[in-house]
Length: 213
Picture 1 (spheres, helix red, strand yellow):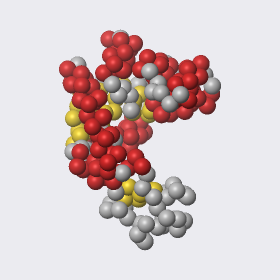
Picture 2 (cartoon, helix red, strand yellow):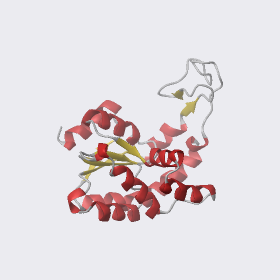
Picture 3 (tube, helix red, strand yellow):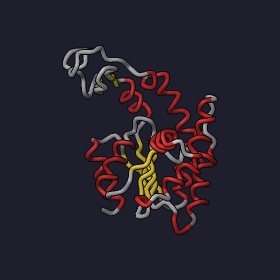
């Protein structure tokens, strides 16, 4: 089974991708992991990507697709995989489809839907410990003492990516880039919509039910 995870930042697609990977025994593949591996190993593709990253430029779609395809060619991906964070643009989606061909096309594009206001509330409430890495939420998982880590007593911080104004900008970019992707996979008959406002367990149950498990 070959699955693409779609969803706005904070929609929970990464969490669900890990749960699905464990459930189906498939590799969970994120572009971030692919980039880190190739940079660490000093592969030719990694060296090419590094030239763009060192210059502060975005890695071109063609190179990103090549990095993903190189990972999908590994033995552990032959029975399927779960792609998390790729494709992000229509250009990437088309190139992926062209490379995979009809016989290797994606089976499902799982679109986890969460309203923007709920996303903003989720992400803006996040707090992290800069010392031990523990994560909290001021509403859902508050620390015992406001602003202080339960584990080590360090002062909690809000990451720049979780600030409301930053989240709003990320959502605007997401909608501009991803709505065409949703429409594309829907046109192929492979997109399924999931209500991401429910609990983690309920969302997971929705997905597996629609995937036929």
